[in-house]
Length: 292
Image 1 (cartoon, rainbow, N blue to C red):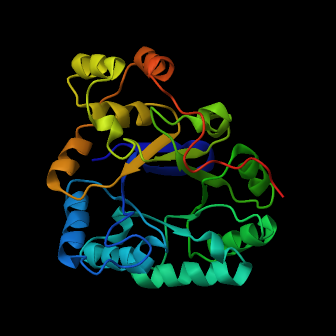
Image 2: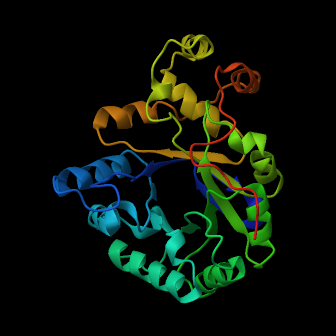
């Protein structure tokens, strides 16, 4: 089983590692050369290996990713799955957001989402309108938990003031190389305020999966793990941090699973935090701090 991260204060838990579906069958539209059987098989393979956290979004392959997930999960007990989707920043008006959620549920062929995220802020739409729609979805059972994505610390604080239900998670770009959540105090805020930080791109498009970085090579030797496994475990060994990754092949899945079931020592977590070279303080998807 995949380990769970729990926040007892808000009665929330989620798997520490999940399957991302970005580029599954296409980017923003379905790819003409997509293979539905292959896409479905990759999800089934992950679930059979114990990965029940599946992350998607309405914009992924123009909704195709959600449809493929529906086919892949049709033979499984829904209660054992942790399904996450995201509403596009273009659909953050009250009625648009509610309609987007309902369409995602229809494509996924499920009655509810375990977690629904605002994919990114839209400064042209009042945040209060957006958060009221999220609260409506939770109050009426369409979603079990409210979350955000690509929100700065200031935006999370502002959003939380608008609703009574807790914002349980913020999904942002965070890994050994890209450290914006640390720099702006977001990681510390999440850990101090009962919120999960869901780190996307944990191995930075494969950059962290190869050797040749002395501090990473040192940890690989110490723990007898691959660079990618060290990079993933460094994230999930931290309080209130979970992550997700794509895993299209059985080899990729097997390597990801090798990142689980053990922990990097606290001393080595801090060693990697301070000594990893060429750290970037701003993400290539920057977290805009100003709140309008």
